[in-house]
Image (cartoon, rainbow, N blue to C red; front, side):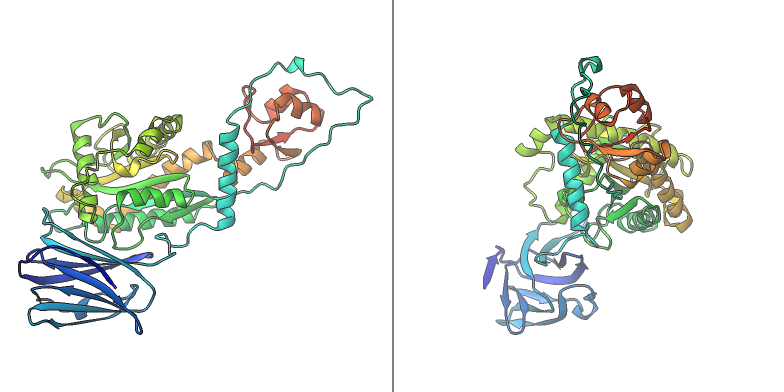
Length: 473
């Protein structure tokens, strides 16, 4: 089966081949001295993928490719038609191949990229349980369908007449006590090393170590669960990272990066939230541009401007949901910044705002954290230090945990714990569509003011799915 042909007639050498294995795909990159024509096709019995390069020679040892964890069992090469190169990948699982070429950039020369995608596989290790996903979907639907009940005059609701049968009390269903999911994104990866320090430290390696430590902190804490967007040395597109967080029903998305500048002097940590109107400083704008350009390294067509917003995204950004999400992001960012300031110098004393692509999730509060300047020699050394890495991850999680302990999602374990600490005795009632505080109070035979006091309610606004403590009469 012939897939495509890529134009190019100049003779080329394959100087190196690089392979990265991800949970849902493997990526094989050919580093070429010139553009060349490539044909990629599949063969069956046994399953193989054949890559033919016209007018090309192999100048690298394919036996050094790290095949473990990929769909490739073995690699064979040979000469084709006297002046061409044939590379045969022996496969151990079903794949859907695709390939494309990339022109030279500031890091690499000409490249042929071959992706082996695994049908039906998730890019995230241990994806969310379907039952937990259903609970989260029901919670979201309930919140959106009845964001708030209209305030009403409690005196206008007549009490039940004595000769009428009592209203049936609907007990609350068991509280889901679900985990709060934190999506942790280690920036860059694979063929995109990110910034490189004076001593050769690669950003992609440092941030993955910090992300893994942060995930361990999250998973050790009851009521929280971590989802690592990238848990290995492979590349994911910027849009794919936020999409994965959404698929995993994340309550919060945090992207970990290490800063860099043309001068070795800047140092310190920074925290960024999305700005709908662009960056708040020239430095923030420069950083937004450099991070967003990594999509070009990852294989997006070079003619695509990452500054554009498609029609759907433009519409969503105008939705009030984005305003609420951004407010949450700024609030959480302030708490994270405060904690980071206890373990590291701060480059900026407030939460910055910039147009990072990974922050453009309209329904998930998101932050991008630059843990330090890898371009600063002293900070580069600290970023390699496991003790400092742990200090940074602990600080980040401390800020996240403080926020969610104060503002837990209604169906979460933290919300259940908070409600039971307030009122360890008494009944519970889960609010249904059409309920009001007055009708709930009448149904359970308690005064409205007492119901408000037991649940720390300042007004009459309640949400579908919210669990109320019913005080003893």
